[in-house]
Image 1 (tube, rainbow, N blue to C red):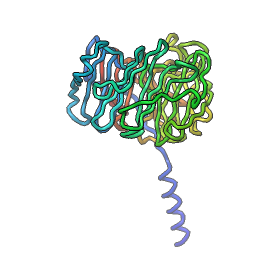
Image 2 (image 1 turned 120 degrees about the horizontal axis):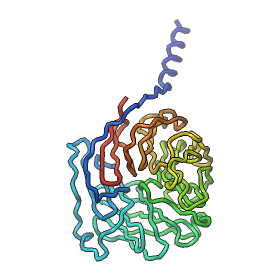
Image 3 (image 1 turned 120 degrees about the vertical axis):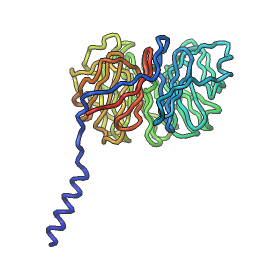
Image 4 (image 1 turned 90 degrees about the vertical axis):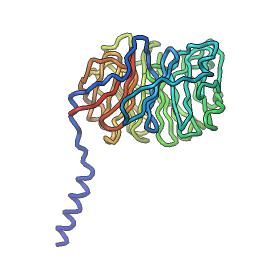
Length: 345
């Protein structure tokens, strides 16, 4: 009787650890908003809502699990800006506060249409933004001195401080980042990872919400201003994935996908010389043990169910950025449209 009980216990414990991968073979695409003037690289999902910011200065919002009815958000203070329109590549929101950041000189960070930070410099180019919680957030951009530009807020976005280069690892020559999908930043708990790209492509890491930093090399393709990591995502504090390549040579499959299992300290190439080629956004599928991922770019949508070792091509439909709602539904945006994706087995 005792032996039987032990065997049952062992079988029960083992069964809980078995991951059964899904075989996603198709993706259903529902267009939420189509407009030839749209160019959307800044998309975020939070608090049961999706918000997108466009390159021509418009904002759109949609309630998750509703009727997929999208509405334009109007901020009078922003519309009265003498420099309107603005090119937004970064967006975030917490509670009733919506934040958007323009890319080039002068860089302007808005909170609900009001400028809360402005920076003037000929080398300014801001790439992405994210929040740890309602009070603390981060934005990153290309170097204006000898380090990456990193902005931090600790008071709900009312004020932002640029971290001095004495507190951040120095950038290498022509190391910057890509404003391709608002996904150069990944946050898990108090930790944050920032992907750089260009002639050098590395990963900056802070374990304490941007108070201290270190940097790790990666084996991803680099060497020119258009190569490197375009997007990074962490499933938990250990498993992370980076994707990119060279958007000028999008069919090149060599050294454009990297993975870490030790929190970003070391990276290895995966799916070497296998599709997909260049992609601008990578996201882990929620609650799938860090095994399932979807990558998108202007030349298609791809899926992996084995941690990135193998990929299947789901669609030729092109998008720039992706965010998941759950393990089967996501919203995507790109040139001319915002759409809803449903993964199908």
